[in-house]
Structure formats: C-alpha cells, structure tokens
Image (cartoon, rainbow, N blue to C red; front, side, top):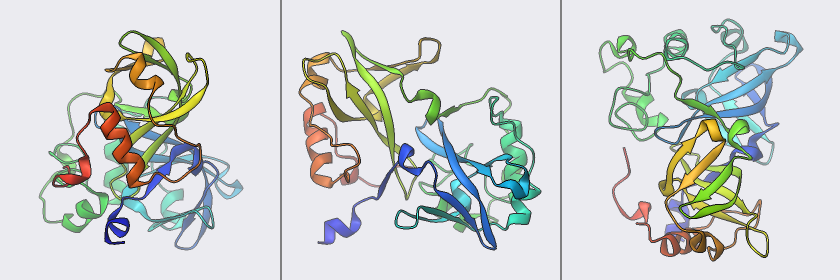
Length: 263
C-alpha cells in the first residue's frame, strides 16, 4: 500500500485533449495540444483553445500555473484568472515558439523560467519546487539563452511518427505518457505495425536515440526483437509499477524510481 501511495501519477497526452481549463473565476477553454521540450522530454505547455469570450484564441499555459488535473470532471485547474489569460502576450501556436516569446510569458505571469538550471524546472525537479523557491533567486528572468531556436515540439505533430529500431521500422507513435508531478514524458506509446500481430507497447524515452524531424521518425536504440517481445500495453489502462518493472527488465533499463529524484 505504501508503494502504491508513492507511485507517480501518469497522464496520456491524447487523454487530455478536450479537458476544460478552469481558471479561478471561470472556464477559459479546452486543451487541444501539448508542447514538450525535445532535449529533456518534459511537457512545457498546454495549448488551450479559448471560448468565444476570447474569440477562440489559442494560449499557452505552463504547468507552473496548474494546480490540479481531474480526470473525473475532465478539468485542468489553474491559479490564473480569466483576465490574466486575456491580457497574456499573443502567441501564434501555428509557428515555432521562440525563447524570446517564452520569456515574455514568464515575465508576464511572474513565474520562474525552467531553463538555465540543472533540474527539469530550473534548479528543481518539479514545477511545485520551482515555485516554492521563486523570489529567492535574483535576476532569474533576465537569464535568457542567446539562441532563439525553438526546442518545443507538438505532441499532436509527433503522434503518428514512424518508430525505427536500429535494424528497421517497428511501428508508429500513438501517445505520450508523462508524470503529473514532474511533467516529464516517461513513455512513448507505440503501435507495432511491422510484426505478424499488431499490438501496443510502452517504450521509455530513455530508449530514444534521436527524433528525426525532417523524416517524421523516432530512432530508438534497441533492435526490432526487443520491441516485438516487449510487454503488451492495453490502450487507456493505468500504468502500474508492475508494468514499469516489466518494461525496465525487458529493455534492460535502470528503475528510475529506485534512485534519488532526477533534477
């Protein structure tokens, strides 16, 4: 029972589609996409399509603003007001999000930036930890990285990408599973299409060698046989610690929960 209580809570990116975004004073809109950081495999933003009250404009919502995700009511609660969202910097979500645009958002909302530190969120492993220390770190908002190239990728875009093993194609990306506490993408849900019988599996993002954007493909560092005989995942089912044990054992990966929390 104790291990179950400590077990990280996972959400699938596709499962969040359509969730309503609830501000402190009313509904803002609904989730239509997620952006992840291609270097750290962390969800950095929800893309929310606002309602008629804001002319259907799409806005970026950082996990730093999220106070809870509630599957029962299909709702994401945030610590923002509708007025704050309304007056946030305009962002064209159909174009790459530059670091300059990100910095404008963090300055506007007075949130600590996530880059420039050893952790997933600045010097911390969770958005909660970063918020708790916010204000104790001087000039954090001015430490903007010089490059302007986007490091963010759309989950909607990458869904459907070909998945290649070291010796051939094995299937396609169907979903992204991330921890609610850290927002780190731990697993890719892959549909195996190059085997005699189609099935779906979960593969750790630690097994990703690179994402080849020009080829719309994900290159993994295992052979096809590893994927063929990987533990089966039933779409929509809860990711249990037992399943994670099986995945780590099969792919010969260290159990990440048995070491100090990653920064």
